[in-house]
Length: 124
Ligand SMILES: [Zn+2]
Image 1 (cartoon, rainbow, N blue to C red):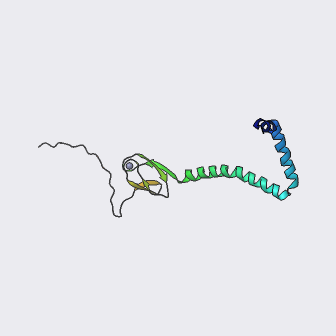
Image 2: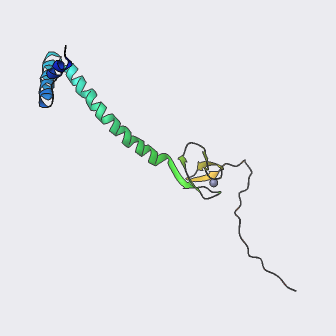
Image 3: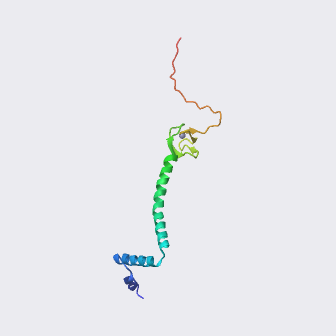
């Protein structure tokens, strides 16, 4: 059999859409209504679920993503509120606490800020 003969049987363009429409209408007239409704509900879910998932993920990320600067080296740090972070620049372990990113320190550690004092020469 010549493969070109089979190609002449293939439907193209508008003919393919018309045949598909007739097949869907024919199948729709045979199947019970509840099965057709189930198909449309599942098709609707297949369209709505990814969109709802996208916006749900955006909403969740806006609530849980923290973007601040490292308290040690001031490099930008981003991460989730519920996880322990580590600065990519200096390697300092960090955690989210009371709306701020803080260093993870052992209990009893006193964190001090360095104040630059200009030296004065006292002459007698
Ligand atoms: Zn850092």
